[in-house]
Amino acid sequence: MSEANVEIVRAAIDAYNRGDVDGAFKDAAPDFEYDQTRAVGIDRGVFNLEEFQSLLAAFTDSWESFTIGADELIDAGEDVVMPFTNLARGRDGIEVQARGVWVWTIRDGSIVRACLYQELQEALEAAGLRG
Image (spheres, rainbow, N blue to C red):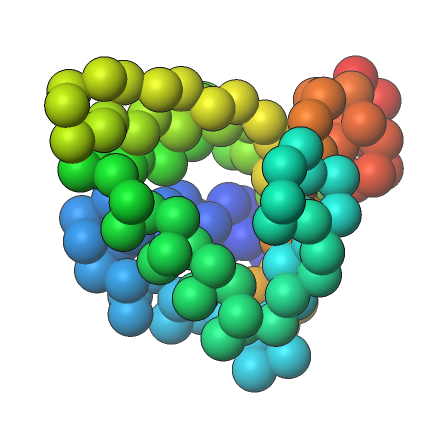
């Protein structure tokens, strides 16, 4: 089952990067939660699906392009640990990279939670793995 969870996350990221936002969220549970309490910046908090979609749209709309870079997808049972390097390009061509780690939680084929971590070790421990 856990390989299927990795594929769910991979499909969501691939869909988003193709511009298929509906496809990116097709496996999100109705009670999906996005935990960004460890974020650095003003958008700290826990968001439901609609709030997360609005937050993501507002952020990405301020860039000429934005790509989610899944550096690795680490199988942790119902969790998938995903270190990322996102690339944003500004309207003047300036590129910015953002790194972090998401832990995606999948239950019964639905994404129920995504949590942002700043450090891989912390994310691995949260998913029950040792770094």
